[in-house]
Length: 75
Image (cartoon, rainbow, N blue to C red; front, side, top):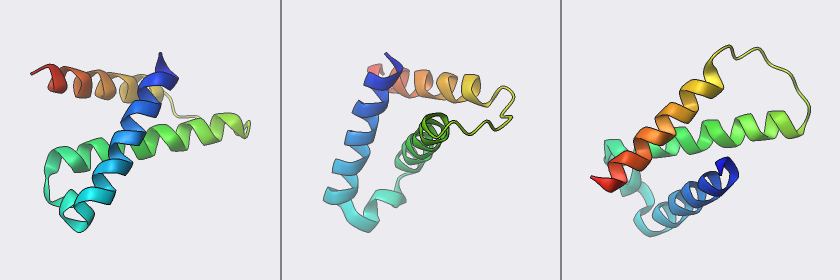
């Protein structure tokens, strides 16, 4: 499920960036979404490269933020 949501959110961010261009960053929710997508992709790349970085509770916090993002869509 993690990869499915990551793919959906990444695709959404790319489409919005292409459509809105620089206006994309004028909305605070878009900045929040972009930050989550960027951090998720960075963590995935580090995992795929077998680079061990001590994030502590970082992955768990990132998952909680993504759940918050899903709940925002329901609202």
